[in-house]
Amino acid sequence: MKPLILQGHERSITQIKYNREGDLLFSASKDNKPNVWYSLNGERLGSFNGHQGAIWCIDVDWTTTKCMTGAGDNTCKIWDCETGKETGNIPTASSVRTCMFSYSANMAVYTTDKAMKQPCEIFIIDVRTIDDSFSRQEPILRIPISGSRVSSILWDNLDESLITGHENGEIIQWDLKTGKKINSIKEHDQLINDMQWNKDCTMFITASKDHTAKLFDAETLMLLKTYKTERPVNSAAISPIAEHVVLGGGQEAMEVTTTSSRAGKFDSRFFHLVFEEEFARVKGHFGPINSVCFHPDGKSYASGGEDGFVRVHSFDSSYFEYNFDY
Amino acid sequence: MASSNKVIKSSWAEEVESESALTPVSSEVFENNVKIVTEFKVLDNSKKVKIVRTYKIEKRIVPKSIALRKTWNKFGDSANDKSGPNPATTFIGEDVYMQFISSKEEDKKIDDGLDKLKALGNKNVVKCRSCGGDHWTSKCMFKDTFLTNANSNETKPTAAETKKSESLKYVPPSLRQGNTKRSDNTNRRDDNYPAIRISNLSESTTEEDLAELVKPFGFIHKLFLAKDKQTGLCKGFAYIHFKYKRDAAQVIARLDGHGYDHLILSVDWSRPQE
Image (cartoon, rainbow over all chains, first blue to last red; front, side, top):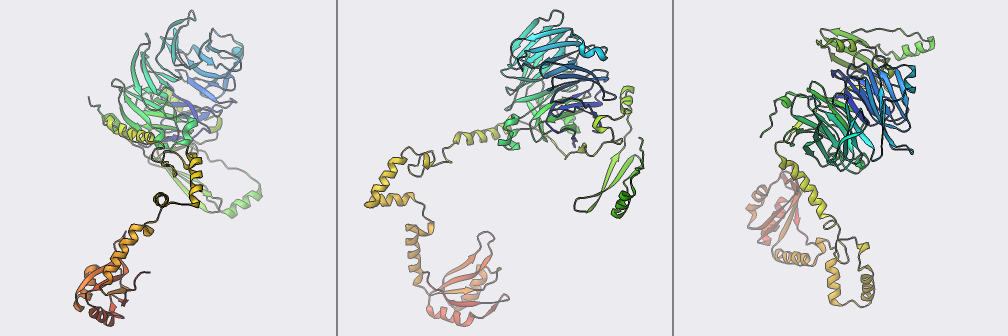
């Protein structure tokens, strides 16, 4: 397969996401301009200009009208997808690490870092109307986190609860009505870099610095499967059509210069969802992969790396013909 | 797909300059579902380059929402881009293949190799010259003691000590004791037989050719053709030991200056090595 290489960023990619239909691909990087691309031909639709710091997270609502970004310049911004104009701006006390629209996109969540004497905090906001008063609007709910900071987040159970992944490897489920913990588990030993749903939101996969990716049941937070690698896992995604997961990772960016790219294992690695066994790899990036995601139709996937490139791979027939031997 | 040709008005000075450069205008041609974009560029070293890009235009039936999004105007940094991918931000990568892994063993093997190297660590890589341990000579624990020993030995080296130091020092193979002895032996043995040297042989000469050449003169004790180690081709000279000096002398008389394989041979007595 010949990947499409999207070269719109000057620094490493932090997160990439497809919209619901999969025709657009949103990419955020440590430079201050998130981009949006047509996934089919790699044409850039535009860039959202306005941030002044590294973009840590990006999300798009299900109708692809609003886009949300959180950045290191202590703001969380809402953008209009069609025009690329900034419509909402929320100043925060510290940098915004994660953000996500709820399933209905009536609400959104963002979390701030524990930095500059500010605690890590989860904010739930109403995003139904975005006008001039938006930036002064009080959040619906604030949950201060006393322990380890939130490093990844997911909306759960049709916007009734939240799942957060933390720096110490903990996963906590929050009830939104009360703002209390429902459940918490600690299956990972280190930072959880990424969490992604499967297609029907019954399971989610975590990617952790402790060299594993794990599959959990969304309701009970029961550990279902573990995918082991030799390097930190930065991102993991579940195929919407096959029982496959893809892991992206590699050694930490700061150690990259001391080893060759062969030893670095910068491949996207495909594991069988059930048997936890690796069955394929795709090479290409020059640095660790920071974010992977499947196209909603499952026929292609994209990966964004520390090297600043986003690569969109359309699977060959060999991928679809491949049968796992068991 | 809409394409617009903008006419940019500029000052006459610029126009003159562009005319002198004579860069043809880039063009877009649509031909049965193929778009061909031709561009001309002048490089820094004033070389003109023609770039032809071919795009296949596909028509797809998509949901209305996607079709609508396709008509959106570009914004931000892409606001000035034409429709279709901009080569500055989008390009097709090299072909990559999905490597299917049939068994886990393969993977393990690689790791084992790495682990082995790691396990070896300093063991075989670093060797102390003074005590032979797994560390650098400069970091040897016995460094000080050895140095003092050496100083005292310098004044009065015993036979055993010198032997030891010799065995520790690197000696080129040619200078090693055993080697000189051996070569002496061989020399002495071969000196019993008269040897001649044939030089200016062609590259393609083989031992069989040489034997054919000199056999008629008399009984050959030993024949040596110098060959290149890598290619196995003749290096251009050979030594031949005859049983009788008379035969050897005859060869020198007959073959010196003899034309062989487009070259003129030079044959003389082989001089003993110094």
